[in-house]
Image (cartoon, rainbow, N blue to C red):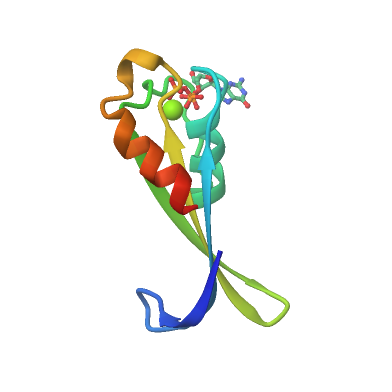
Length: 93
Ligand SMILES: Nc1nc2c(ncn2[C@@H]2O[C@H](COP(=O)(O)OP(=O)(O)OP(=O)(O)O)[C@@H](O)[C@H]2O)c(=O)[nH]1
Ligand SMILES: [Mg+2]
């Protein structure tokens, strides 16, 4: 989590940024959980994630603007392209 006076895409003030990494076995629903949270979408035949991707959603909680930056990882080991990149994401979150 970080706190500061930064601004979002639409110019609104962002009070907090939370970075969350989703990890877990392949096909357990990580990407679809994130799609529902970030865009309120669900897809029955979604493809396995390759590497890492992220999506954001900005929420108003207790009069504060909170930006959730959610990272989605590949559950299938052979699709994780760069292990060292993964580690740097984990250590910064
Ligand atoms: N019925 C049902 N199917 C779901 C649900 N969540 C995910 N699925 C299905 O399960 C399959 C795998 O979902 P994903 O979200 O792609 O799984 P993942 O954990 O991201 O998998 P990897 O990217 O390979 O790590 C997809 O066909 C989804 O449509 C759910 O809540 N209900
Ligand atoms: Mg996925």
